[in-house]
Image (cartoon, rainbow, N blue to C red; front, side, top):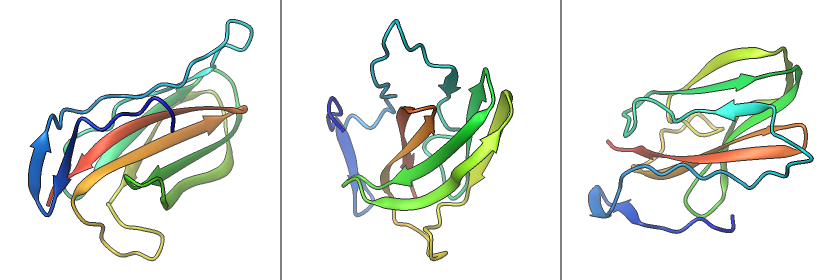
Length: 126
């Protein structure tokens, strides 16, 4: 993901650098305004459950995917499912696709809607 810089990390349970959470939004065009919003997860840092909130101004298919620090897909919380306009919450229990608990660290969550996406970061601390 271009434009994402590492300011801090959690390695083997030790905090390094600035671990305050910073949202990362992809640029938008005036001709193609985004019709959705992705909010910062809460709580953040979290252990073991967090809630991701998003809103849609129109209906459409969305995907909500969690990635690890290396950009590997961890789990698809929502996989190309139609949602009507409105505000939604999706909780995540820090499990991967296989149901295994993840280790402490920085993770990214990306909401995709109508060929646009927004990505934000979150921190899992055990």
